[in-house]
Length: 250
Figure 1 (cartoon, one colour):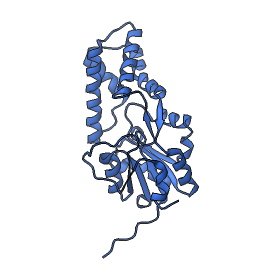
Figure 2 (spheres, helix red, strand yellow):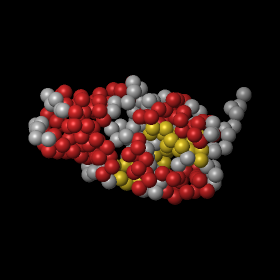
Figure 3 (cartoon, helix red, strand yellow):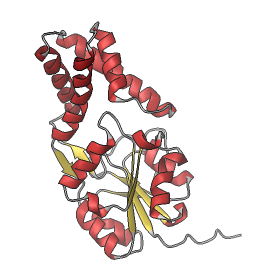
Figure 4 (cartoon, helix red, strand yellow):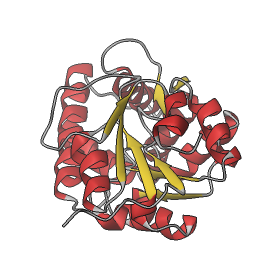
């Protein structure tokens, strides 16, 4: 018996990092480097000191803990959790005011790091919305909290182009779990089978979208990662401007 035809696309959701925007901080682990520099500067300003090598190792251990929780979908590893883990790793016992400043440092880095937008994202969003397509965000939050991410989008003039969102530090769920997508889908008022999702990760974006019956689109405009544990998308693009025609809404 032939499969039922897919309903027309009525909404598109987007991953945040490395899909809508990417941090521009030089080559390699630039975002991590800025976080380490901010942490070290805050500690030094308080009259304390941590050897740079120890701090780098502590940040490696912290990111490994974040990734463990991310892959296991075991809940958000917050900036507060990060400060406590890093401080314990280097033998630092910060007083409450210093701890608060260290936690806030992750927000400050997130606010200040230069961002590049994904190729064609603004014209693609304008074209989709002109065609009556609703748009949303489904984001696995790292160490930059969702209020900061919203502010950065607003600075870029992009926040007004989205109708709904789902950030993991608000929902409590990471992709590929269906619950990670649910707040955005509810806000959009569109069934998953009439929605496409665009993201850079096979394991989180593609696997999550396909499991919900969404059209999965993998974006390679910032990078094309080696295959991970997830399936391939229905479509692979390196320029968001191809979306309207690709999804049959142009």
